[in-house]
View (cartoon, rainbow, N blue to C red):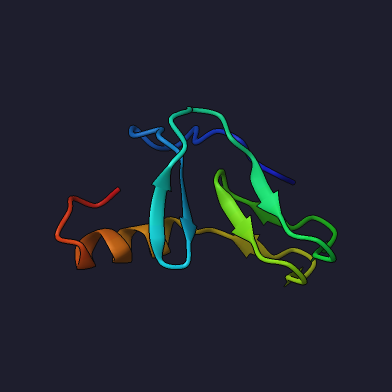
Amino acid sequence: MLANHFNERTDKRIMVVVDQCIHETGTLKFGAFVGDRSRIGANAVTTPGTWLPRGTIVPRLGLVDQVAERSRLARLAGRMEV
C-alpha cells in the first residue's frame, strides 16, 4: 500500500528525505518514489513522501516510515519537529 495523505497528523505537509536532506513537496497528497528494481512485499506500507532507492527490498508486512528520520534531521538542524 502506498499511502499519499497523513490522516492522523495535524501537520499534513509531506516532505521527502533524500541523502539526509529534507525536501518539501509543497503538496498535501504525495505517494512515494520507488527506485528501479525495488521490491515491495505483500501488505507492506509506505508513508507519504517515502524515498526508496534503487534495489530496495521492503519485506512483506513491512512499514517504511520516514517520519522518525525527518524528526531526527529537524532536531539536528535546530528546527521544530516536522
